[in-house]
Amino acid sequence: MEWLSAENVIAVATASIGIAASVAMVWYERHIPRRKRIGYRVQMDNPIGDDVQSGRPNVRLGSFDAPNMANGTLVLLRIENDGSESIGLDDYTSRELNGLTVEFTDRTIHGVSVTQPQGTDHLMSHFTPHSGFGYDDDGNKLRLPRVPLNRGEYFKLLVLLSGGDVGRDIKLVGGIRDGVVRPNRGALPDDKPPLFSRAARVITIVLTASVLTLATIIIARDDNPPPLGCEKGELTVTGSTAFAPVVRDLAKEYEKDCEGSDIVVDARGSTAGVGELADLKGGSAKSRASMIAFSDGRSTRADAALEAESIALSVFTLVANGGLNLPEGLTLTQVRRLYSGEIGHWDELDPSLPHRRVVLVSRDADSGTRQVFQDRVLDGRWEGVPSTSLDCDLAVDRSAPVRCELNSTEDVLKKVALIPGAIGFSELNQANGEKGVKLVPLNGDIADVDAIENDGNPYPYRGVEYAYTYGAPPAGSLAGSFLDYIRNNGQNVIRSHGHVPCSTEAGGQLCRDDD
Image 1 (cartoon, rainbow, N blue to C red):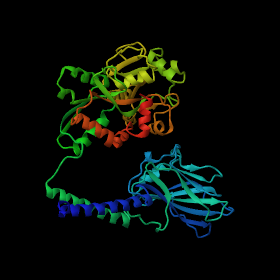
Image 2: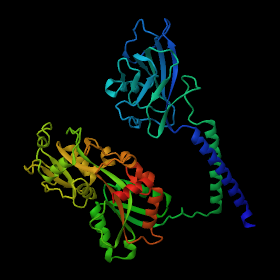
Image 3: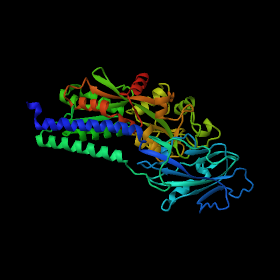
């Protein structure tokens, strides 16, 4: 029988091994911590004696000369990155300035010394009161700063305590994004944990052997169909400059998975992109099927021939020049006063602000980011201040405030960073990576994708990102295949850029609510 051929038997056997290895991997993932991990262990918990030595402390808080202490103890605690990834400052999830907190049950802290191994001199620069490091008088909680730890790096804390016996519970409290904080046991104090356990190495070898065997069968058969759903050809993606970084990464992933496809991203602004698509009305069916236009929010240029599909919920933010101090942000009423032209200098809005010209760095009429800003922040009103300068040059027009219109989100961020007193708006993820600008809270809420998706945060400046096509994409078209790819394979890329995919259950509800 044909199905009993040597190739099929080998393929079935290899697949069975792969399934067994996958089951083993599921078990492994349920019992082995995630890749980012901070471990801690108590290396010493002793009553104070005459022979106790603390070594050479690098950083020291409090006094280690406290005579007549009741139940005095010394604890040596080791904090280590024993995961497989480095931990950065932003990986700590604490809402406080400090990253982690050590709690000593029923004991009071009198002093702490921090030591580090050779070769990690950079760690000590983080142990300052300005970084949250310290403890309260008569307190039992030691606040640790957000210390970046490369794989295998660690530091030690020598803590002087009173008021409790040795062996009382000691906990390290805090969280790591995509990781865990947990106690370590069963290893020598200075041992480095292995990158992979024995079980993980065995599973990796089995899976690798399975994949290589199947690959050999496929190559031997000389049968190389493209992945399911791939299409060849050329596609132009235009529209939103705010969403363009996401589309570029999605296009690269698709081209890598689907040979023979060529996707060009030519972002010109949401309105301009949708208008360009609509202008293909007199063109051929092939030309109409070879373009997708992305728009921040529903486009005013779309007509009945265009179809819109919600792709992601985008979060935007007001941005101010780094020298403008707005710690509490602005209310929607204050923003509307600024953009109506009522306020010419910042101290007219708040006497505590400097007497500095208000500079409104805006986008041109083709911008979907500007359209969402007008709809969601300005309550549907157009910006009342006319454009007074091509590049917000204060010397060109002496009227107040000054307003200019730029062609892209990148241009807005650079201009706001350059001009004192400037304020503008941007897609959140692009603003987060820009030097010289500050995010401005609205009605007391800072732009936060996680809070919007998971906590129902009412932050107002957000909108749905739409993909427009000229009618429904024809079967077998690159446009239709690319949109299918975004729905089914693009969630991680969309999330990596700070957007919420509409194809998820929670994201779908948010996209419907904001439609």
